[in-house]
Image 1: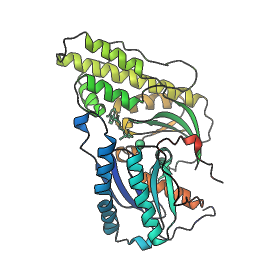
Image 2 (image 1 turned 180 degrees about the horizontal axis):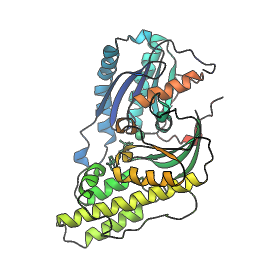
Image 3 (image 1 turned 180 degrees about the vertical axis):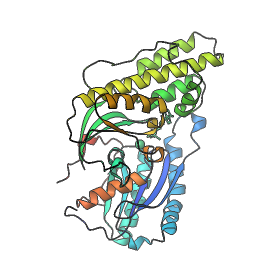
Length: 353
Ligand code: KG4
Ligand code: ZN
């Protein structure tokens, strides 16, 4: 283990950057001692996450959830080795709740505090012990696909993330959500759309594949979403025949999968590493068609595709605690004056020594 703090107890992780309230306790070697997660339910009626509702719900639930994971693990705050809280990017109200709570625990018990970058937490997840056979050694490729993020990153070390490309408009999950909404599937649209697509013909509607074949690794989904909107508008409002809806869902999903596979293919083509690993993470990684398309693209380039279990792909506190462990092992703690950052691109992380 490199010089840094020697972790004298479990690490508490806190996640409150969007609409999941989560706490987890990991032992210094990364095994999960206890975890709690609440996917807030108050947003669906509004068709998206309402920041004020999210912040209030974090405030209401987080203290009890932290007490719960400590109790279940038989741990006391004074016996912890550190506290790691997501401090950006995300919704500022939730970030303030989670990071302030974490700092309070750290201050009260003289513990090191880590201000975790949420994207880095996703990026380091495959290094959780036991997740990837043989371990995920740096460097590896990460495709992060969620409602708020769509990017390809070369993960070269703690604090060393080389963004290769990102979306120039919508994130892919956002596109699923918007298409779901305009088809009347409720929110979030991704899971409902995937279920509907099971009964549809993916070749029925030839939808555009934005950016496919273009140099680089950037993404674009707004043209695809608009194409679906135009297609839906050719039917009387609210009267999409069931089979048509299923065919549109399947056609959209196939187009999105093709786009992701093409962009990942570009990244893999130029990526040199002894162990060729493509990790896919984020809520959209739950989609079976997308996983299959990425698996095919990876195999073609001699890469191994790793998709962590869905509960570790979507927002959770285990990944936050683990990012804290990785940082503390290197002696990278943060001051209690660290201000949460609603915008915090990976390239602005200071590289680890
Ligand atoms: O990572 P996540 O839980 O939260 C953030 O956005 O950070 O991802 C949620 C996103 C939503 O856009 C949701 O529609 C999408 O992931 N999603 C899916 C599926 N399950 C969730 N998209 C496509 N297919 C799915 N099965
Ligand atoms: Zn996330």
